Image 1 (cartoon, rainbow, N blue to C red):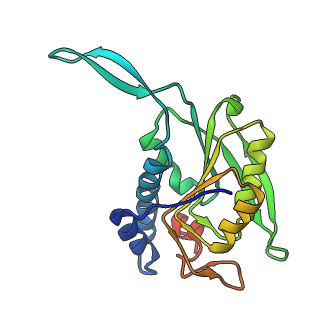
Image 2: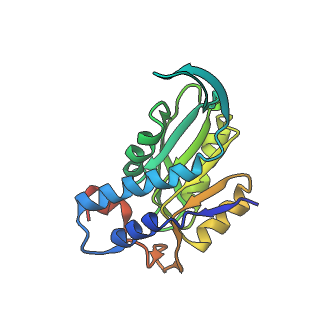
Image 3: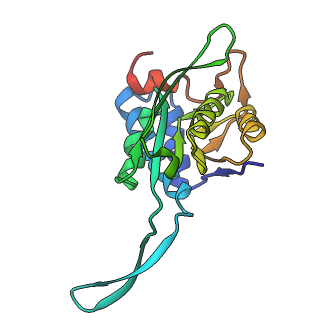
Amino acid sequence: MANLHIIDHPLVQHKISLLRDKNTGTKEFRELVSEIAMFICYEATRDLPLKEIELETPLAVAKTKIISGRKLAFIPILRAGLGMTEGVTTLVPAAKIGHIGIFRDPQTHTSVKYYSKLPEDIAERDAIIVDPMLATGNSACAAISELKSHGVKNIKFMCIICSPEGVDNVRKTHPDVDIYAGVMDEKLNDENYIVPGVGDAGDRIFGTK
């Protein structure tokens, strides 16, 4: 089954608390999402392989390590996932970026894909899907399926807040995908929003609430 990794670092937990506050404005909310994404990405990339090289320092020849040829792609789910992109690419600036657009049908609550633009060599890359909220898990599962249909073998899902229902959905549908999150909240409400959550993350990131 898919592993759930909760990043319980004090800085992550502190920033998530600020994110929850209904009085946190758009600018600060956007900055917090980016910062938290960077911290979680640090843990999500912990298993990148290394190789040893030799280089010259100002004093001597050093044997040191660099990332060993593993190519990454970050895939934000539109639109809220865009808020995490700057944070993750700060850590891995050479990564390519793809985009998958998914919206939730207000009547059926099913996920509908309306856009997909991925790097041409996506099948050769490890992919990390980013979306601030893992609520029902339907959008996450649809995005994972989209990547698999393009031949991607190694996929991780990264969010800030997840629900038990969303985690269970991803685990059942894609047991090979690890989930990295800042915190797991209590439940979903009748509108499928995470409680206590942060409200609508997309609206709060882009100031459209």
